Image 1 (cartoon, rainbow, N blue to C red):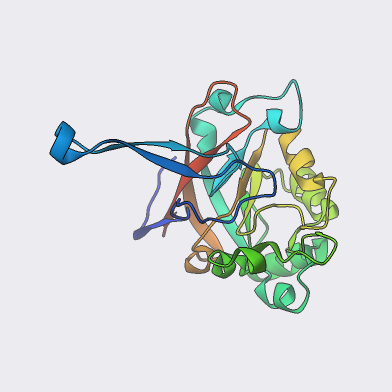
Image 2: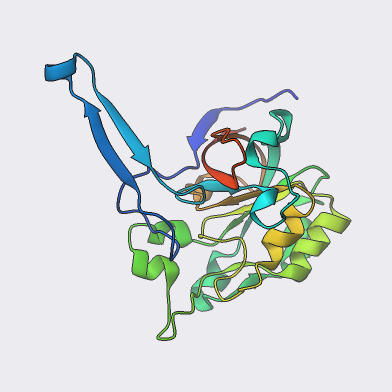
Length: 233
């Protein structure tokens, strides 16, 4: 693959102790191990969940016989990308889920999504990252309300467009109220790519960007915090 680009953009949030954490996930912790005045160098130990911060989900997070993150090939992590913007719809309805009609409307303007593409959904939720309450948007029963991919749209993209994965700027590619994790299961059943908690999607054009995705190669990992670089044409 030949990548032509004019600029490179981080799509990963900075990791610190106060990032929004999925209920039940372990806290983000940093512990100083060495200091320059005492040891001649500075070093910290860190701890966080495999699905914390900007991260990739591996197939074994939903399928016992699925590939762990260390099994994903380097080639599979360099992907051409399209971006579908649903910010207006999501602002009106926090439970909004991408539809097949949305995809066809995008294609009417930008052309058919090419086989082998990664589809990113820009919902505007990246701007809520600094406010955990707004980011998860839980109701009085604890149900989360944020937008995502509908299962119908995901099946269409996988079967009719042969995409390699999906990504989003929320904490889940599935809408917050979907406890079945339908889109995760559909994509990961094919050992596809699932990226969550992305940032800076507003800086990407609808098509033409290539992503380089760099997970930690955790043996047996169900996923990994990930550095994602966007090569923008």
